[in-house]
Length: 215
Image (cartoon, rainbow, N blue to C red; front, side, top):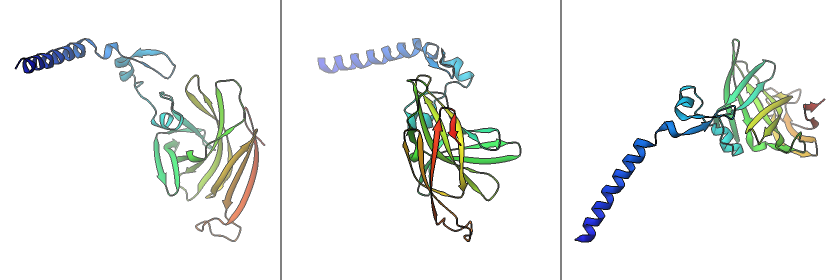
């Protein structure tokens, strides 16, 4: 009987303690890091839209940060925030939507083909390349190779440059040796319709520098 009484008293005490903690430890006591790296109160961050962590950055790069993975959309002067992870056909991509004037489109980055490059401007930087596709209201799907730099210290990724690969090509493989990237793609031959599966195998060797692709 005494054991039951003690158990009930203990349970009541735990509920009271939990209530005291919840009452005293409010959101005012919680701080988060914003995009500038400054620590701010949770409530203030929530009001300013800073209480946010990028799912793409966390899943792909293990960085819990409010900084998003941004892609510069070639030929538009616009940027696209990659907000979702998805599977399209045999590809696993990070994707997002963009608007450039009257143009609306989608960017998809094939994150399974992310390949590091032997470059660094500092110990906290990691250079890598990744293929991405841009699809707008037109019939084409334009593929590019992007070079990016990951700043581990500031938990950010910057899109440095893009290299055009082709319209509706298939990126088969990517590898790197020092600062040279080897890309294997399949492209449409001259006598092929664009709706057909690309048949021509093409190999590209592209050199990469700290400021982008060396043409």
